[in-house]
Length: 341
Length: 236
Image 1 (tube, helix red, strand yellow):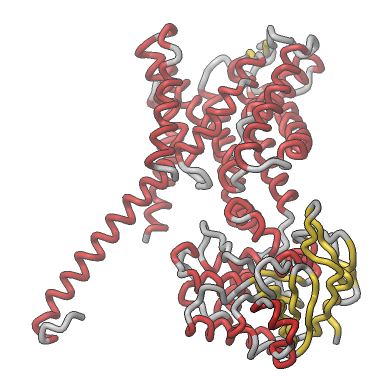
Image 2 (tube, one colour):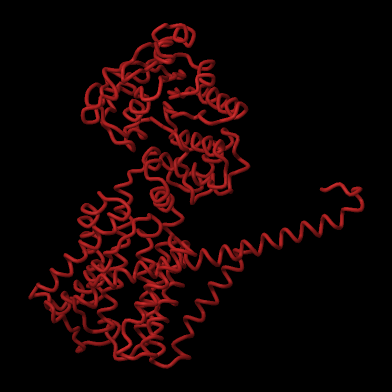
């Protein structure tokens, strides 16, 4: 029954998502796009950070690589963005080998710290790299528009692109979660030594998780570049961005399929709300709220919003079960001569 | 038939010698107990066989192939399964998923891995826990789950690290029964044990370590009457 309920709920959410561009104005549509894009990178991050438990705080490196790869290919070589997006994903997946090679020697917090360092290196490289636009950044030309060049004057097509990419990333996670890879990732997260003792080459499978994650994160970065039409090291390679990706997944629920989607809705709303409320000068209030949220999650809900909802549901089910048993007991008590059943 | 040959294995940690020239054999389907007082080097030797430590010298032959120095996952593929002193079950998974993950070494298909896992859960008398979270099981149940998980890789030899420590007498009996069932399937067992009551009646052979060296080897009867062993356990 819960399976059917979940299916109905998912279909309803999907239909709402499909109907959304028709009913909202363009500023709200833009916010919806931001939610979808944040959700997509959160879902991509979740592959390695959630399922495999390797908390990376350097994922902006992959996001930036994707954004820079597609943009540079387009600006300097006239390569079609669709090809550029795919190349960006593949380049990021390839470079994730070096990322993994250098960081997976470390565990836990030390791994997380190393990923920050590697991402900083990538950011410094792009800041200093003249050909790549340096600190000034790169503009995506608008001379060729339409679906063929993934470039539009209106927001709506970007909404469809972001929604499509999110669904694709969710399907990839769903498939991996159910395949042997998902079991291996969870085993590595739970007990790495026990995983090795049953023949799991943990170095290889951590790397697979990272490469898949890097691939989808980079595609998200490319889409960002195509939508914003401008990138610089600060907007696509910053540590703050890396932390946001992790936070989206952690807030929603690590290692769950839809956790990052919920996390993205909440986080992006906070971000936009503070921006509306405090304007440009109010910048930084969202960061304060993020920090507060991290503390609340760490102290009260380490399993995130999804975990909280689940425990709420379980408690309710347990209560219903208990009252049902009491009712049965009360009904049967007279016939069993007061013997507790 | 000879299955495992440990030849002159030495393992040092800096200046500390944990094992010095230890040699012994395990035959197919044999139950061998590895005993000794605290700090004798039992677990170190065990970790060398399972690939968690690389010995500084000596060879470990499994079915004629030297596995000394191979990483744990390669040892598992070669046919060495192990359990740990603490169960180390995958706590985010159900009991069945724990065993499935191990069965996937032979079979990546999830449905077939599940079928294999159910078979091993039944073997360890844990079917009723199949869809329960592993974290909700008792210590003794989790240890048996770890055994089922280890068996699911279809090993030739199973290494058990103190499976009986901390169990009550009826749980020890259950553990003993499981070991005998494993042996009956033709899988050799090498058991590190501190609790001698459990291991003595079922072992075909006992190897005694003290301060990193082998001090005795033989049937449980021979070993328990050996004055050297008695001295090692009780002191001079």
